[in-house]
Amino acid sequence: MNTIVVAGAGVFGTALAQRLAWNDNNSVTLYSIETDVVSDINSNHMNSKYFPGRHIHTSITATGSITCAYEADFIFLAIPSKAIESYTHEIHPHCREDVIVVNLSKGLSDDGSFLTDSIPFENQVSLKGPTFAVELMNGAPSGMTVGGKRSCYEQLERVFQETVITLDYTPDMRGVELMSVLKNMYAIAIGIVSGRYNSANVDYLVMTRAVNEMRELVELYGCDKETIFTYCGIGDLGLTSLTDLSRNRTLGLLIGKGFSNDPKSGTVIEGLRTIRLLENLVRTSKTDKRFPLLHALYALVYEDSSLNSYILSVVS
Image (cartoon, rainbow, N blue to C red; front, side, top):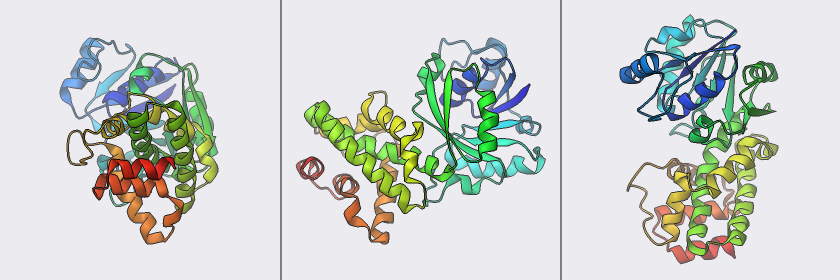
């Protein structure tokens, strides 16, 4: 049996645990600090807080005890990014040396450093891809990219058998982490022109430019430009940019239709933080001319540039 702990019983952690439980060789435990969620899963085989009316696989157990990770073969991190460092450092002294830690959370900290740099485990990988949690829960075939050691990827292939989740691989763990934040920013950029034009021609014009900028940004971080051609690259960019389930695209649509571009209003959107972070990085690196889409987006959201100026910058 593969002893698996999914740390975080929110929307994505629950959905992934559900799929992993399809493999009869996986023993899956959900760890959560929410006592009501733990009780609901164990007593009713449901997570009513995040998936009302949906049943959880009966083989999945839940716990609020952090010790569940100590004997795990695989630990999947589906907790908020800000909790990654404290959680992994707390469990690290007690875990098996050969445990594989899989980061599902967004790839950059507030200061621009990589989340994986703060994870103290030898065998760690990043797992990202075009996967809406609700579709994972519904059993839709899906693709994800493993970034890190090939030996870890080979073991994860065994874990994902029978789940109808297809894995591809790159040794570029940082590139996979970076893709997970870049696609949110460019989803806003593409959503804006979708809101203005409602045109497939324009969407794919801007998406192509976004792909090129993503490749340049990945290189700026010292990562592999070819990582864009994996599930976590073009696949996740397409999912996030062109599907209305995406909050980042939805924000872009609202801006494009003339509603709000105030980054302080409404729900916190991941892409907004990335715009500011990456613009500052590019300016200090003196590579400004390579990122016209990023600059136009920053000017619109943070410098009160007009929507018309943004549109002219990105489609001409």
